[in-house]
Image 1 (tube, rainbow, N blue to C red):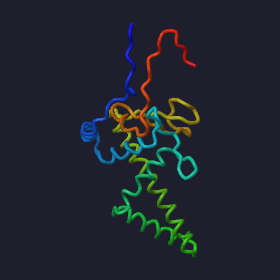
Image 2: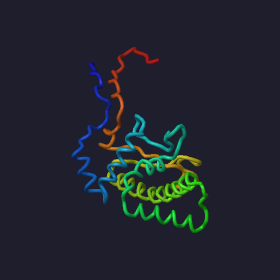
Image 3: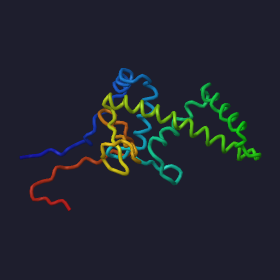
Image 4: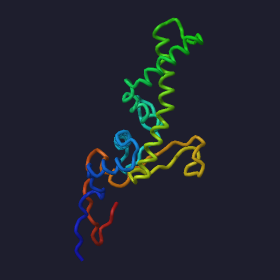
Length: 188
C-alpha cells in the first residue's frame, strides 16, 4: 500500500469572522472575551494549554493574576476606577497608614489599588472564561496541591486549554509536516 505523507499540523483552520460571530452569540461581553482568549493564546504552549503559572519579570505568577494585570490598563480612564483610587487614598489618609515620604505613600496606594482591581478582575476573567468554555473555545482544569482532585479549591491554579477553532490563535512557528513511517523503519 502507498501512504501519502501527512501534511499540516492537524489544527483546525482559524476563521476569524466565524470566531467573532460565535463570541457575539455566546458572550455578554464579546470584546472582553476576545481579549481574554487572545491573551491566553499568547501564553499558551504548542499543545494549546496555558498555566497554571506564567513567567513575568523573572518570576512566576498565577495565570489568572497575569490576565488581570494584562487587562488592567483597559480600565484606567473608567470613572469607577478613578473613584476607587480616590476612595482608597482618602481611606489610607484617614487611617494614618500613609508615610510622610511621597514616594512610599504612592507605592502603598498603588499596591492597594492593584489588590482591589485584581480581586474584581479575577471575577471578570472567570466569567469570561466560563462563557468561552460554554462556547467550546476553551477547556478548563485545575492543577496544584492535589492534581485533578474534585475539590476546586485547596491551593489549586487554573489551566486553560484552547479548543475548537481557537487553537488557530496559537502563534509561533508552524510545525513541520511529519512523514508516515515506512515498513522496517525504526524511530530512535
